Image (cartoon, rainbow, N blue to C red):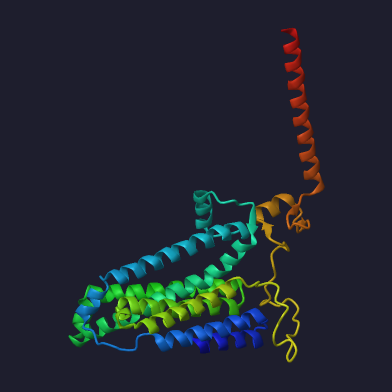
Length: 337
């Protein structure tokens, strides 16, 4: 995985012209260290399992817990992705409208942290699906091979064969879907790195829980393995909080600067220049009927057009006038009594 992350960063920099900032370099070094530590202190002993034993391992509490956590993470990232996408994209998937209505989400403004979570959700979901496929692959292939040794006919009439193949294909399809849709919106050095790290962490953790290899841990190896997982999560957080639009601190800028390309399709531009949050596409459309970009104040909030400000002022004045009339009527009634 270390090779994937480093090669992806270098290829993205020199082929796609995506800058690599100091933050990215630190995150990559931390992630490589995490991979080395977890690999060194993960359980090494291997055991050959029969198909019946592999099927029984699916029923263990550790595997149930692993699948439950994975499903919860996938569901959470999917909901966040669709809700925020419905706020930033004028043509989101149909599920966005349903989820926004169900969760009663604020559809007017998009905080910066939600934009960061949206970007992270693409690589995260690809990595989770990839990690699950790796976890399932060893047992699935072993079971299918054992069935094939009994005869080709036996393998094809066994329902479990089709079930396992269906799960693997399902995982691969969703892994490719999320990583490709993520690459359409965000830099490769960001999406692929997150996918690779989570893929590795989920696969290692899933393998330990499924094959019950945690029983082989000593206190020292367990602590160091946990430290490696912590480093991996910390590296992911550094990537997740990176700014995918303002990357001026390119570490290779001095030796080999990126050549400016007019109308570069690989350049990712911030949709609206805002400090902490930006209006959703609906607010932009309602405040700019001519299709112009909205103006922002020093606090990052959208400045309403003069016509709307005047209308709001008149509405406020009318409201104050109506309140004054009510007060006068109340005083006249009190005096008559």
